[in-house]
Length: 253
Image (cartoon, rainbow, N blue to C red):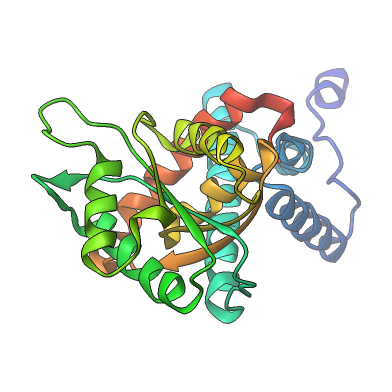
């Protein structure tokens, strides 16, 4: 009897009703998604993980893997929600914002596929609103002759954008530095902190979070991405978001 009492299962959380448990799990999941990528998401994720653990008899390794899986699903759901919002709610442009285009791979003196898609998405807005200034951000990678910023500037000028509207930031080696260094360029040139981020759909969620965290007010203009690489880049975004969370800690918004 004592042995049975010792190994008695903990009662189902948060109550004995299956309906109540499902509702609680869904609510915690929604709260975690809405809080992402802020570290506030850790609280509902932890409660969700704890609640599920009350109903399984797993070893510690499976429990750790479960936590990772929950974190992955929550973060990917937050990215997808952001992408859907961008598609159904086109960004409102006043014409006084600063545009930021973060860099990506180049091929010689030409933008690679992803960078070209960003530049092509930016061009209609820049041509429609001549008051918008644009910061192009990206370093010269090892083995490249030009910086990503220089290639972007040249491409935009070739499409009719006036050189005086284009500001280069040639040091950013990742998304965090793209925005931190671009903010410094904006401050030194008196550019608006209301920004339009032009980047690929999967990258917009992380970019916007970084921009908010450093004191900018972002809206995003999504550039298309090939469907065949969607899952690869979604997984990469999850890992990159973990890096951003570690970098900014509790200040991440």
